[in-house]
Image (cartoon, rainbow, N blue to C red; front, side):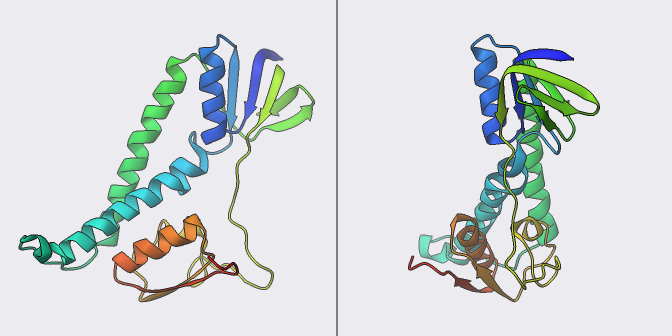
Length: 201
């Protein structure tokens, strides 16, 4: 059994920030992540959507270039190329984060961790005990009762990040940050977009 000052279950934004700060304070840290270091924000949330928003902004600016005295012609969206750009942004930041965690002497463990005692997490058959345990297990997209997510016509934000085409029309269910970001992206890419939101704003 390996002993640490801090055992962190989850390598997303909260988990890796905690690991880096704890290490900076001189604590012995283990960071456990079942998927990819960086979590939802880096791989399926904030970063990829910002890359798509940037591509959408370029499309909008090209359409409106004449307003600025610039001669440009908008010929459409090449989704495989947009996805390649988005994936490149993610890859660069992921490599940078891996290097940062390694440089701070944080022990990084890949695998699905499970809390087996108030001070112990088990992953890949190995137990890690800590004076402190931080649960930073993240989030996931959920559906509504009776709404079958098929990954084709009805998609989550995870699916939407990997579409290889621009939909002709889209209904975005939910006007929160993620919904509005995708609505903006698709509108900039040329889709007819409707947002459905239960709350007033």
